[in-house]
Amino acid sequence: MIEKKREVMADGRAQIYMDHAATTELLPEVHEAMEPYLTEEYGNASTSYDLGKRNRKAIEDARSCIADVIDADSSEIYFTSGGSESDNWAIKNIAGAHKKKGQHIITSAIEHHAVLRSCEYLEELGYKITYLDVDEYGLVDVKELTDSIREDTILITIMTGNNEIGTLEPIGRIGQLARQRGIVFHTDAVQAVGQIPLSMSRLPVDLLSASAHKFHGPKGVGFLYVNKEQELPSFIHGGSQERGKRAGTENVAGIVGMAKALQIAACEMPYTRSRLIRLRNYFCERVLHEIPGSRLNGHPVKRLPGNLNFSFDGVDATSLLILMEEQGICASAGSACNTGQTRISHVIEAIHVPEEYAPGSVRFTMGRDTTKDMVDAVILSLRQNVAALRG
Ligand SMILES: *Cc1c(COP(=O)(O)O)cnc(C)c1O
Image (cartoon, rainbow, N blue to C red):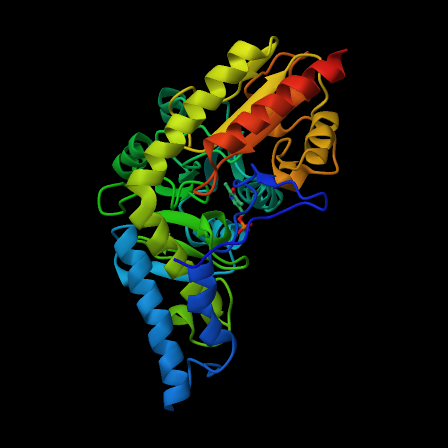
């Protein structure tokens, strides 16, 4: 493996990156795999000479590599520019394709903005959207979901793992219900792909969104899985790329990098996943024990391996993050899309975090490079800074 240089701050101390849900570092092996397609292998994959055909092959190899990892067929993988595009494509175009059958869509109150804003856009066009409440752990209630299904329900879109509080939704049961009722089921699995095992041959999922930069791949590339039984209209009209459904000359380097990153994530998953769960539980127990007035947000066990979201009574998250950053620690308050706004995130609101705690909600997300030493340093920093802000 290629030696990785450690991030060091100006004063020589190591940087501790605790924001893997926002994005992850490109792996050197991934960079290496991408490199030829940024330089000498510049051919257009749609051309007939070798320079182009080598790119076509690289794209199709990447497609089958990704399909293998998630137990799908190559023909079910469509390359996109990332998670947001995959969500937009799935939701808007399923809505469009099924509008004669009905115009009702079910989602949850804690989805990523790429899902929520797509639904709001459809609402403006006359669609009816049900935003399901979640319980105190952020779980969608399958019984409530069942009750909200109507004659004209055409799509259910519920995320696999929440990006803020890490809660894993019961997508197997939701998908089963959707199949029984003949409703299309889409899941935003951007936080879950590469973190937990997902098998498309076993899960009753019709469409699934993923993004490379959340699993140590490059930014600006992702994929949408579309079950072969599913008819999905074209999203970008133009050339015949992606079987005519998503036109535009392919981001070959990005696609190759994404496949490499997912392959590595899948290989390491059995080890990394259990290691991160142990580290997460250690981190969580220590914080809840050692810092009075702290609480864990999200489900205690049904959560993404590396995700922790805490709230601290009487503390302002923005101030806490500034103090922690001075000590080299990168973490987030709510989702990265909300930075610059001090308002409480829609997810923290939806799980009814008590008023005194809600403004003090901070997310720590760990990854393959996170060590116990780093966690210890973060806990020490939290203890000092939470106390300082309260005093
Ligand atoms: C990051 C994220 C997205 C957006 O993905 P991009 O590739 O950044 O567009 C969508 N959904 C979830 C759950 C995410 O965490």
